[in-house]
Length: 305
Image (cartoon, rainbow, N blue to C red; front, top):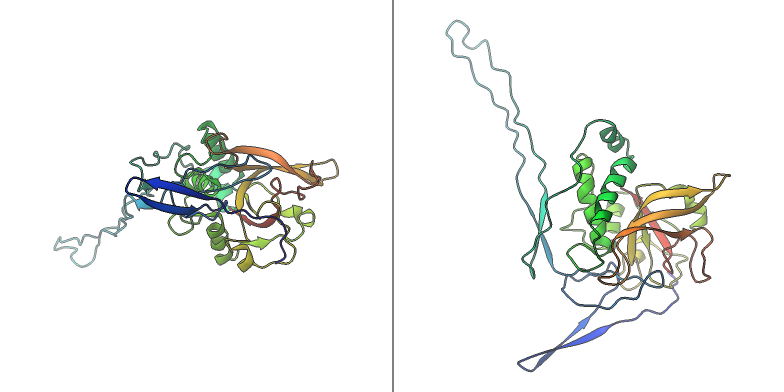
């Protein structure tokens, strides 16, 4: 993979009483070591950085139970002839609660609309999540989750919050788990393992992939990706640095895609809430912006929720 552009490594020194020093290397968007570092960010669209604030563990509350119950009829007149109809206890879909080692807080219980089995359920089965997705995104936008100030508020964390909401709406669909696929490259790896990750080497020629529910992966700020492989995109030093979810696509009168809207966590720490942005254009407003990119970040891969 040929890449150009500068990559910077931030280092901070923390002095502790007891006369010892620790040097901590800060990572870029999607390359999270799960720490509780306080970091400065450049504002988007010139740059964008993802961190995870704390190590996270997921505890699943509740278990599925569905043992058939059969009772033999003991009436001598019909003994050994009649059996009670098997009955299977209903299962309950459990919801994960994320426990943060360095904090005593946990993620709130789900506040998304209750699961329905009508039109939205049909959409989920047909691999069309646009209806449920808009409901989940609207709910998250109302929460004004400031970038990188709470658990799961970096770009991959916001993705996992969307997934949490879609699990409520589309319980039969499969999604990457928070425990094993925390950061943006991990999420891309899960889609690759499922055979659902597509590389994007020419964004303008790949606009048919821009649909609501598309998960877009972006490279590092200012880097140009020409010939590359999945393995190279999963490299923390050179690969994927950000992701977001397409919620709307805009076309001109001829049907040509001119820009799309992306829901993601981005910006400066504590300043920018997770929201929908629409600066992702076929013809960028600045020469340094690649077509259909995220600021200076090139669109390099795509999957579907």
